Amino acid sequence: MIITHEMAWDKCLSHQIWPAIKKGWKDKDTNIHFFWGLAGPNIRKIQECIDKKEEWYYVDIGYLTQQPTRYPEPKIHDIDKTYFRIIKGKLHTIRCKVGDGGRLNELRNKGIDVEFKGWRTTRGKYILLAPSSQTVTQYINGISQQEWIDQVTHYCKQYSDLPVKLRNKPRPNNQWWNTDIKDDLKDAQCLVTNMSLSAIDAVMNCIPAITHQNNICSFISSADVKFVEKPMKPGRKTMNEWLKMVVENQFTIPEIESGLAYETLQHQFI
Image (cartoon, rainbow, N blue to C red):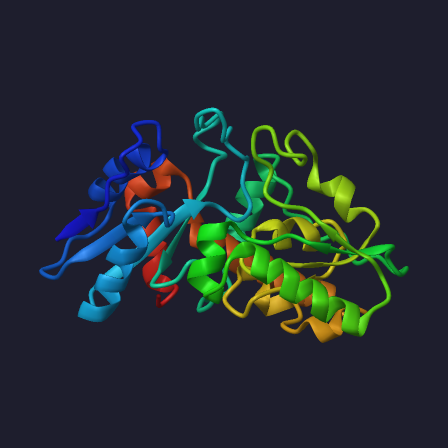
């Protein structure tokens, strides 16, 4: 049975995705759960799935995609250019196969930036800290967002004399609202995060990242803050292979509805 866990907010994007899931996913005799984000009772229900050993998927904004409007309410601007990640039993893809490059070319032809541009060759002026939300940080790290910021800042100062600059998630009325992360990345030595997709912004704009081991960028990033002065910078071939993998784990609503998402993920041995 396919179980899509409904969100109370009627504007949530999941209300557009769940009908596509129900149409394009192959049903089984056992329960298959789908969750959008970690809000509401989702963390508790995900834990129930884990305890019962029931199959569950996490659905959220895609890795390489045209971004929808987030506030004051979500809005998809182009349904064929807006991708959503679908991950089995995790928040990010960490077990996967490299695709043949066909899906990467599709995004490129749609005008979505999928080009690895190389790495900056000079030392940055600061270390950029970009934490995940309070909810994700508590779920992944077991501490508050502020505790994570304090701990990571302390460790960064042990391994570098560079200042630490914070960039939190842009929200209406906070200091990062209506700002572009590329401006903060421009002079960064590296970006440090736990699970934020800001890591993708970084590596796609010449800045290496340090991430949690379950971040999608963990394949091509350092995992320890002690490497802030010499973070991992994989070669172009490795980066292109990573990109070909990433796009095999995100789909448009029409691709979900048609069954393409289901079939592609079966090939991924998720």
